Image 1 (cartoon, rainbow, N blue to C red):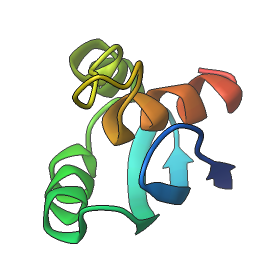
Image 2: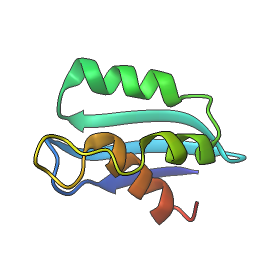
Image 3: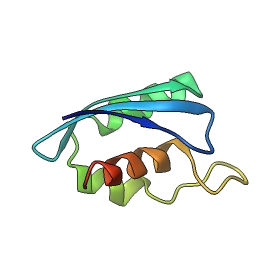
Amino acid sequence: MKYVYKTQGTCSTNIELEVENNIVKEVAFWGGCNGNLQGISRLVTGMPVSDVITKLEGIRCGARSTSCPDQLCRALHEMGF
């Protein structure tokens, strides 16, 4: 299932992701810190959704209450995971 999530409270504006059989197949962030977000995308590709959520949910960016990795988890929850 492909999905586009509009982020809130981060430098990135959207996350485009694809999940198949509870495995993250593809993640692309629009905007934000390009190198870091490419790294996150490559690291989570091939991981079970539950592992991504366990590792990344709740991460904050500076004084912000969320981060791009946390927004990825919110997107996965919005997808029903």
